[in-house]
Image 1: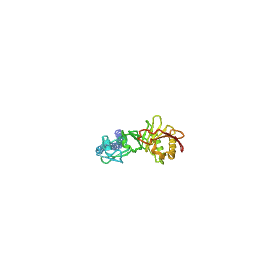
Image 2 (image 1 turned 180 degrees about the horizontal axis):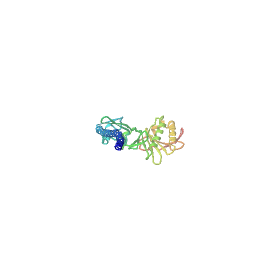
Image 3 (image 1 turned 30 degrees about the vertical axis):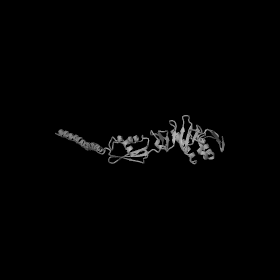
Image 4 (image 1 turned 90 degrees about the vertical axis):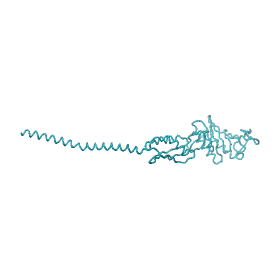
Length: 275
């Protein structure tokens, strides 16, 4: 009997720790189960909320100051790109596409609750025409628009490929040189050999050559103020390729003039005129 009691007591002692061990893990299992359930519920709820909020775009608002493009044109560009819902729209893709337009310098695209898209456009500012088909912006970058006749009020620059920034830099330097003389550039060209030529807004042509362009322009202005300004209406062309002076081609005094009618070439150095 004593042996049986001892054996029974030992079994109870072994059972109690095992039970306590199971009860110890039960709250953790319950907590983990509740957590998993909460996460699944939250995920399901988030998905339903996303579906509810990801509605089709109903309003496209276009903002900005427009001179060359208008709100209707921007809306037409954007509409094919609005294929997703309010939340799934790729705003950066829309921005990149808009900035491919030659007249769009910068585009900002944002959402507006509950179904709107707001587009703010900054237009390019043309500084000069480039040939007959494009223009240069304030950064000297070329933008092709097919036909730039609407920009006829701007000076015309022309040169080889990849020469846009160089021409813009030289044009600005020349504008600074000319600002006190009242002369303005209408056309500035640089040919494939690197020779410069320009026409002023009074139809006077300057042949500059390849080297020391700004130095030659300064020399021309000195001669212009001393000798040529008073005779501007009689001059067809001034050749400033020379080191010590300029050569002047005069217009014919009478009759209709076509091309270079004047045949008398005058060399001027300082204030002395030699025929």
